[in-house]
Image (cartoon, rainbow, N blue to C red; front, side, top):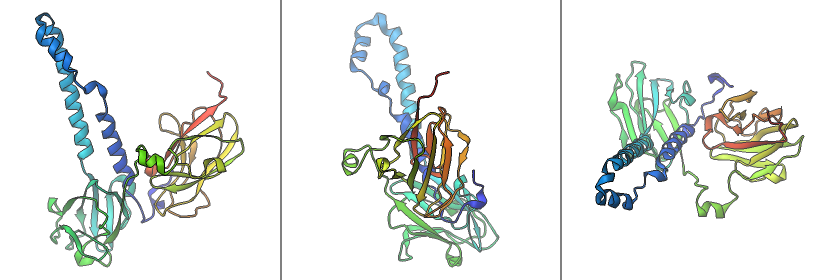
Amino acid sequence: MANSDRMTRRTVVRAAGLATATAALAGCIDESSVDDPDDTDDAGSQPSDEQGSEPDGTDDEGQSNGDEAADDAEAAPLEIELRGELDGWRALEPAGIEGDVNPTLTLEAGRTYRLGWTEGDGLGHNIEIRDAHDDVVDGLSTPVTQEPGEQQWLEFEATEEMATYVCTPHESTMRGDIVVETPVDRGSDESDDEGPAAGQEVRIEPGTRVEFRARTIEWEGIAPASVEDLPNPTLVLEDGETYELGWTEGDGTVHNIEIRNADDEVVDDLSTELTSEEQPTDQFLTFEARKEMATYVCAPHAATMQGEIRIEGATPE
């Protein structure tokens, strides 16, 4: 795995946001939380069953509380914490951008974030969000101070006009880019009409080099022809055979590729270094297919850049 020194300034926080939202949504989808009106009527008309009906009410209440907790988790803003220094904003949180100076923040349109600074160098700083014309967006600006606190946080919903975050007194050095992207919902009918569905199974011949295009929202197949333009295809490999897997085109954000097992652990150190190069030459893994291989993943964007691996011909234990 790459260390933080390999991370470049063009770094994203999108993956963390998607992971949080996905976990929250998973807790909200449960058909058992839907009450059956007939159960209520039966409880009222048969006194002998009243005691037996009480656990159902308790379960419903517990489910309701669970749904509310999931909703709260989904609604919680993602925090991006910085340190104010004269030569630039230094990232503290989330971990994916820790230590980077003036990192590019790639945000999801419509998602809520908190952006602020909690440490400084003793000089007067503030933070504000500006558009492409260098105007402050929606009054998102804090007062200049030498001692950061709660007043140095901005809470906002990401919108497309947001272009930079800036310290007014030191805007020539303390300035980072903001990129706002619209999430792609491939589960909708509209998305299905526009292109192939994610996860389509493709059988890969032994000895084949599988090549991808690294995009923050997905892995997009390039070669062989059977995976061309497919998003996050499921790769069907033969046990014991040798393959190459990697990416040759990027979108300028930080990516890598690694192979993980069902427990989300890297298999046999099959992981490349993080890089933001748009045409990297060192992002391929050569390996022998084994039954424990379950997914291929980009570590910084695991919520969206993940495809399945299915091994055929493995001998059961």
